[in-house]
Length: 131
Image (cartoon, rainbow, N blue to C red; front, side, top):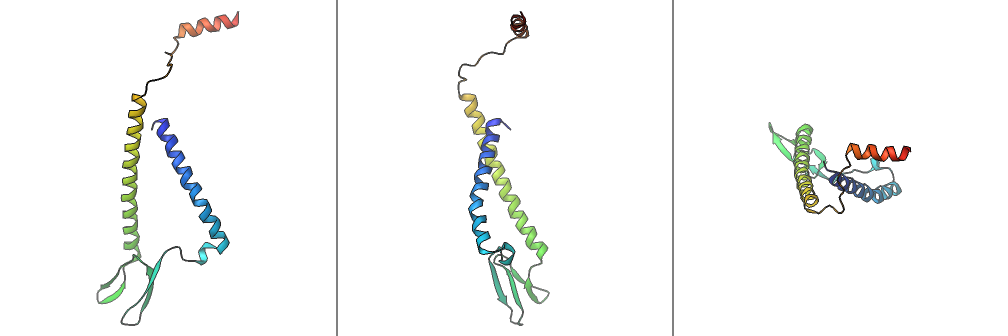
């Protein structure tokens, strides 16, 4: 990864971290985070009188004649699938940005670029300094 792209990535990560700080400060004022649910939930009562408190996006289905939320492992699998898809999109966007930065760096004229000194020139300089 080029140095410029790495710097931009570090800058974006720093901004995201800094944006999260005020939210965490407010959370501490309201009490411990474990005391409050960290997700929006719904409470569903079935015709049989069963009550389920589940995340809003968790489907409730009838399986084998029983109305219940889908199994937790299926729910988490779906969430991770969504996360992986989002990470793939972000990775492709970062690749696009990296390619653009590479093109910009290649197109920009190098200002006062000096060719690297040959070994003989470096030896001559060191000989002058020793004398």
